[in-house]
Image (cartoon, rainbow, N blue to C red):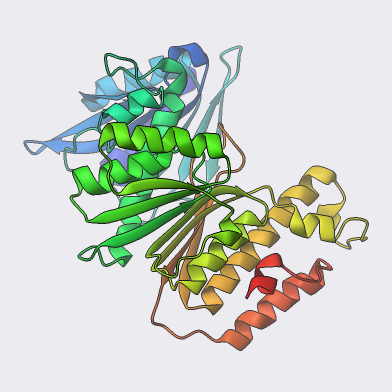
Length: 383
């Protein structure tokens, strides 16, 4: 189709100029294809250039290598049959391609997202960190033949992503000693079991993990699975986060602990001087209820849905600033695709020896509170 000429020209030019970074295809036409994305990058095999296509299926990744002429044809066919959008990333610009339901093709140029090219080594498909162990079967993620149950494929992908994140974060932790890890609000234990299996059986670290969960039935359920799997240093306790008393926590985890339970967990990590604090905050009610009925000047807060999201960001920003005030390096990023949940922000604090300007941080916190008419943040009251 002639409509693809601009894509062909830009792709060819980027190859000639050695400015091609990557190409992604998204917005699948049919979810039933179980192919959410395809990623394309340049590689070299025996000093010969190829385009490597990674077909990101729901339960596995597949890769194929093409020469440039074949790659262009494959991209066009995928856009006509399976996807409604693509982005071609180059060092000079990003080219966005959109396909309408009537197969009409449109383009938009934006500033480049990348300053450097990706490595051109021939990599294996993305590593799966989750071994197909017995706990997955007990948690109904796999069947008796160790196959991923289709409806649990998203959960399996989430677990792999979680372990990938943890692996990167452990670079700031002393793993040569026995690590005490506490998972506050462990729920049914999907991520807790996966973390234990990965750290103990794959990485061979000496680790003790305690899951804190208020619901007694889930604690009994998880302890039973831990016993069946021989996970001797993994146990679950039925207790409120506020009541958990342990000043020896090397890594504190709190994923989707509701509302101020996230703050209770952060406080426990701060009190124990944990090397790493990992949170995925949820249900940000405390600040929103505090300012209910208060007229806000910002036009962003005129509409309810924007107000909710804005106060989520304010709540988590103050949490991050409080962590920084207590000598933690902080970062906030997306945990999993917001296609599955909007509660997908992960807040990380890693212990640092660098001294902070606490007065400047206090000023930032007070400025935020004054701007949004907030009297106090719950985590401040705990400290």
